[in-house]
Length: 380
Image 1: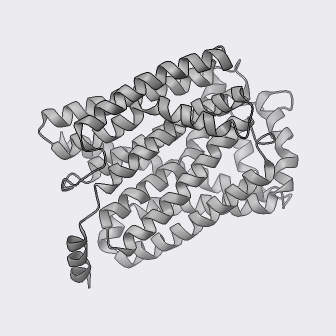
Image 2: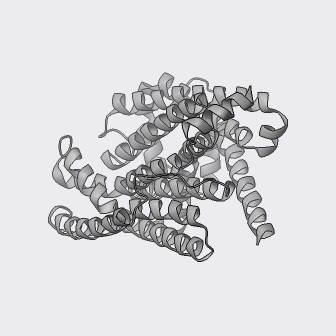
Image 3: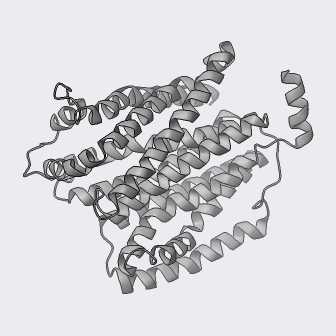
């Protein structure tokens, strides 16, 4: 079992590395074409190899439609794509156990550099989104809203990772860095999902495909980060958590059930039907919830209390997704009409709920101040 787990882990990390090495140069070069006619257009040619970029096609019409938007903010987008691409490449180096063990100075330098360029990348992403506005963003308000959440989550994780390492909270730092990198990976994950959908279900609209990609990529990234942190370090000492109580777990299920009924009633009134993006995001959330339940039960059966606590935290947060949906819908009504606000909330609530659950999940890795002080002294 240990060999199998290690093999799966190596294979998964190799896959992530290949994706980053392929996608990052394309992302960086994508905005260069708006400045230089000699740019090879790697991203567009790669897509056109499998999907038509004819202006009459879904992808082609979107590419041509988005040209004025990108041209209007090409300097902002150039900085964003360049720094995001570099962050993905650095992530492959930063999360290498061999580099951390054999070249700690390189690890520290690349970590500082990565946090800096991630901050720049997310700040420019926010600048682009607010400059463009929700109406002019690809796929409109729903996609705008999810991109906004991604940028805020990545930026917050970078800040928390920096604060954690300043306090010598190594495991806490690793948990936030893992989350940050996982959320950065939503960019290539969305493209992979969209291209796959266009190949297997070309009858759907391009806007629908992009909303599915964004809605599914977010919670999948959070769950992936939790898996990496949980299985990457099995020696975490049990700590206190704000949800480490049976009543909290039961309350999450009850609140989620009541919230689900309310979401169905409100949705029937405002939206009227479940389209493919809503169905895809709902199905993905249910699958991830069942995965958390299964991992919790397996950990408990194996006598691993800490792992069971970890998965119960994420399970409770995922179960409370309908509550997050209602809260987000109320907030979004301040900016968009009620039907649009509700639609945006349904697509965004899984990643928001799971991210909020990831916070106490990560904080279990925090050492007491006494232990942290002794670790700092030992490090010196």
